[in-house]
Length: 279
Image 1: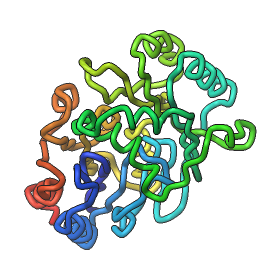
Image 2 (image 1 turned 180 degrees about the vertical axis):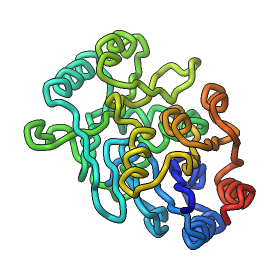
Image 3 (image 1 turned 90 degrees about the horizontal axis):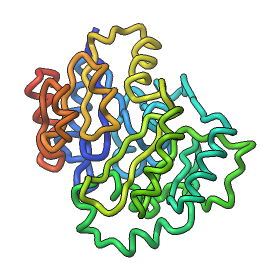
Image 4 (image 1 turned 30 degrees about the vertical axis):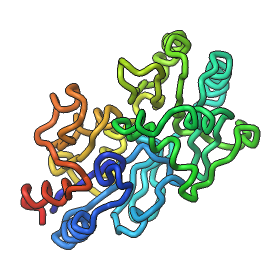
């Protein structure tokens, strides 16, 4: 049996150009032709997988950082937050003036102020924070973004919440409640005057989702290779038999990795797949 390859999107398959290079597209196609199975493994919700990434054939996708697992076009796992806990999170964030987006299967529900926050921040501030840039740019990419007033907590399941806290202390005040139920992932730097990140249900990370996909296909985790660049890839890299991270990844992530890849826009994934003998 071939390898199971899991690819993060932002900062891994795509860089600042927001495009997948032609060599990387061909490399994934070639790897699959060689008997390996390729999966997206992303923090993006299903509705957020847009752009040229949709033109690449994969064997499946892990979305919302583990909230959804799709194999051969079929949802084999869906995990939603408890409605009472979600209600508390929303109230907590609103009372602390924290902007957020609720990720669901078919839409993203966004609080007022996200666009205004982006307009106040020069894009240069986001150059080295691809997750923050994605948070703002996705609204322009044809996905289904709706105002929070349209969200019905009784009928719509939420897998993950992305947040931006313009006031850092306001977010710190929320942490004691959040950490009881969630893994908290932050993407901003210590010197930033804001905090952005996401909260992910415990036992529902990218790493957990990898296990679900591999088990469903009757495979073995010893045959897994994962590619990522940020802290929401930590569990994925930890669980994979071989973990490859961006050379720009946080030190904590590089410390558990086996290898690194170069800039996505410089065919980093293509070069890595070639070096590993997968293509």
